[in-house]
Length: 325
Ligand SMILES: [Zn+2]
Image (tube, rainbow, N blue to C red):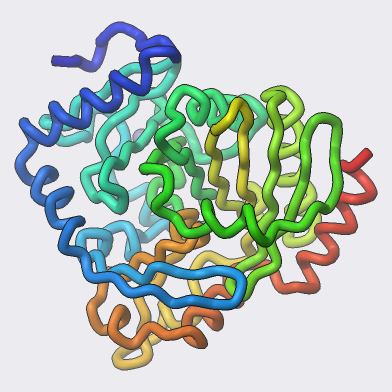
């Protein structure tokens, strides 16, 4: 059994350690085991567009995250659920560098982890955090590592964390190989974009962790030039590692939630998109929303929260003048 002060897990055994942590937690934590079991019964339907697709899912256990109040006053008034002292007693962490890796108690993926900074400090990207994300992706090649910005998906914007979920679940992983178009190369990093019907996305690939870290960091800064936002430019990030190189997806955002989220009654849609939704798995905690979801409603809601084509064109120009060689 692991404890809070368990030994550090080295990178080369991290994959087997997180997999055995998952098995242990499923055996010893019944409430959470039943939520993972329920994932097999989650209702889903596919919406197909010419250049992308979306897997619409009805997942009631995600209502806490979808409705999380993330304004500064609400955050100040609640106990931080990612701090070790406030975690459920059944939740056992694995120590890796300055993080605790733990099973996510409200799963989207069949194996779903939260990777929590050990100290209570804000959800903010830095080159060091981007580097950590890439190291995690390499150490956990069976998983996609993701980051929700503090104003676009993180339900704990006051406590730094990544998440990890199984590869090959989010539709975008398959789509971009066929449709991505090359924007150019920065040293050792190819920068592509994926023209599609739902949301603008950049795809970066490299086998150099240093160059990729710097390029992701630079592009996040440019996103803030197009749509300024505090405390940081709004982005959702996905990172994965295969065939000795990394791939990072950057989704630039301009709003947290669509207007439908704030409606009352029939017109309300409980859609609070984060990285996984941008990756093509649409998480709807209300059954009515699942039943009524269709192509035009989904496109309308994504349009409100992601970059417009005009904003994305400005971003591409900025990348071409200041990042590409
Ligand atoms: Zn905390």
